[in-house]
Length: 619
Image (cartoon, rainbow, N blue to C red; front, side):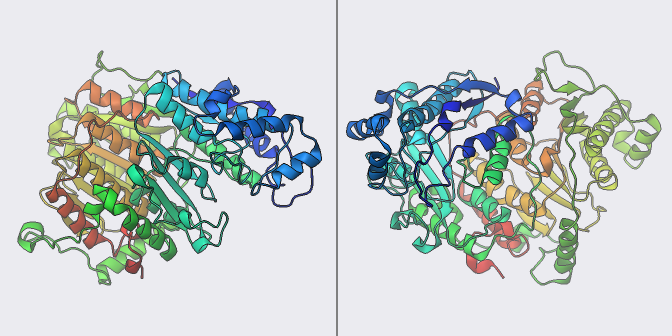
């Protein structure tokens, strides 16, 4: 399965026939600029190209009234003056003799893509369409939108394919009120929109675009609005919205041709499985963004248990159980060590870290071949090793690396790691004997830091403690999951028990691991599944997939040699760009998991701004 690109050149036919400064930005070049850029980057050639079909009038009727469909059909025979008069009856809209044909193609492209994905013909895809659709309502055109393409696609997925839970993520400068109106009482469609609002002073100037519009009737809680009340939101603001409200699944473009073309290219690259480029700028959400996020969370909390749990004030944990004797206390805001570490991190974040496009996306380095291991065709099995003398030099401080099998595994890991640091390989999986897992991870961390990595994130699961002599210089962030207790041992050393429920695991990843990771902005990520890690394959795959959004996708997973081939195969597919498998039935976090998470967030929020979702915490 691959990535589909659905398009039809006829969608460029409709254009404005009279002077109208408000509508002139909706023009054919919106499509041609994006398509030209896809071709220049060689991305169109990597997709399965599908020619859009027209949606039938019956399919349009899934969300639009027969009278409205008939009205748009009749525009095919109207003259210029009649078209202009009809257009004036709607807000920010123009009709053209080709509008009905183009709008049916735009809706049909979405239907084609839904069918292709849900029948397994493709993994995912992008429908490049015009006119847009998210402002269109049951019986009215609005904001350049004629038929509501996304709403029709969602209704089609429900009717034809029997889907019961559909997420629509609407990323646009304007609120997609048309989709909201069509599904606001429907609990089978969760609609999420972030948009410029400016306290109601930005088009479409609607009260129901604010955060407290949460749906109605059975659909209460299934409309989620995140209104931006100031302009200039940056990467940190959007990442905070991802992590503290909802992870996005789809995008809808804008009107600036250069930025539109770039956003389409980045979307297609992501769908194709290419690693995302590193984010730029400081990862500190602005005050206005935090106010909007918290307003949305407060409005949604009555309808979502996960938000109710996260917004409960944490009960302070006793020092005896969570700050054992002999361990350094958590860093407090304003302390000299905290200030020095934060200053070191700040200076590192100012240094550009280049991640060149690798020739190999994913490589697997195993000590012994396994005929039951199933890998994607473009994932290579690495046979080479680092030089024997070099491997022995790195192994010398560790007694557990003296045995031949451990030394062999270390040599393969060093060769793979060097390939990643040199930009030849993007991501990889290496194996090590269980008895040498801690020592091998120690070598991998030190090798990475000494051979080009400016900032290294290590997510260690199981019995893998942070080396006591590893420098506290802000260059490494160590997160141990399945630690003995929840403890912020320093700004760069955090330990938490492995949550017992899937809901707790998701809360830990979204509420702790990813905010810390994005705040740290590593250029190399190590994920180590050590002895007793207790993580099931789908959970490990989800963690790896989430971390792949960092460091340009430069992620190295370290497994025990006796791990199942299925686990290695799942991780290889995820690191190569495939979607992780389902986690199974959903569940909520246990009270103990919630308490541990909130305790750690409370300890770390003063230093790590990406953990904050309450505006009053911003200095």
